[in-house]
Length: 205
Ligand SMILES: Cc1cc2nc3c(=O)[nH]c(=O)nc-3n(C[C@H](O)[C@H](O)[C@H](O)COP(=O)(O)O)c2cc1C
Image (tube, rainbow, N blue to C red; front, top):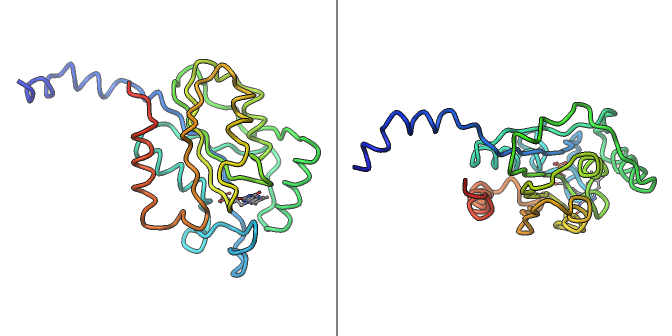
């Protein structure tokens, strides 16, 4: 009988004791809000009109966590970025021009505990923030499923899938990555969009 089986202690024990094998790593840089900053080429996240401390990518990461019940890990750089838009643009541009590899503020969790790793980042200067290059060059994702997601101001995924595949050739890269414009991220459809996407890409255990 189905009810009996589902209520069986062995099932309950398995469900409650099996740790999630999903990790959600995200990088997001909320900016100091200027009222006229949202519409420029690289303007601040529209989300900040509503939730000042939440970056767009962070918001999407939280939706993915709700759906997967995975562990969240916020990627932060040892040297914090400026929160002023123009200063942030300049620092990010310089990092890219010098091909920098910013150091992480805190070490990653032990990746051996995870099979599926979502990695979220904004697009900066037509590619991933350089700290995402640090992440993929300095850690081994071999055998893991990497599921990228981005927020952006028009560049969608930019070159990020190609770059991740180059740096992690032994990983299974899900190319059906999620990419949400910062102009849409606070819209009413986004939670459902994320939920449906997770159902499509999340490997079944
Ligand atoms: C330094 C910088 C560079 C950016 N460059 C691009 C870009 O090349 N293409 C693009 O579509 N959006 C660009 N953007 C916009 C961000 O991708 C977008 O605002 C994103 O949603 C920010 O996510 P966050 O709030 O999680 O940090 C840039 C933003 C910043 C701060």
